[in-house]
Length: 267
Image (cartoon, rainbow, N blue to C red; front, side, top):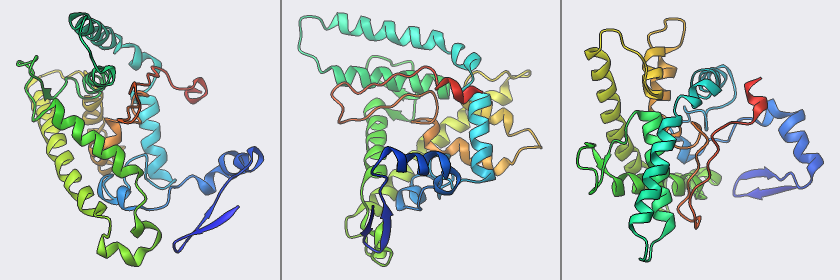
């Protein structure tokens, strides 16, 4: 079924047979996502794996993710982080026994702590209970950044379907995306600077987290440095693509944990 959405035609796969045509038979043709304001402003000009068009650039990024970051051995090496954060969550909930709590908030903190420690090496946000962990943002500020990221990636922007209206930013989404990009840049710059400083201080540097792995790969002359630099700054490393965690502020218990990819992706 085809519908006209603004000035853009949309085709809907309304049956399993048609979905198979799109997702399997003609997958290479329909693999790329259409350019959007979200991809431009908060995904570094469609340069991360989520928004990049299908081609050599996308395939190289995906290969790095699957072979260097998401292989079974690498994921197993982060088991101690998952165990530690689970115990911290249970201990925190036990300490609040007898009182009313919002589980979503505690699961969100658990998820975010696990993701940041796995991807970035440490939490990089400060909390009232954790004075020793220095960061450029508080937990509430980082949560706000991620919430805005999810919302703005899912909005229907009029300028995406009626391009000549994009200059007017009638819904105010473009302004919000530009502000979000600056906030994310501030956080990611802090993280990268900290990792680069640690690399310089260690004589025989051994990667300890996913950002370290990217920085180490950037030294490989056979790889495209520009790709790695952008991947380091691509927020999907911190959010969706890496490690199979997905959070959403509208889900009552905002946690879906998938410690393994589908088995066929490793073949």
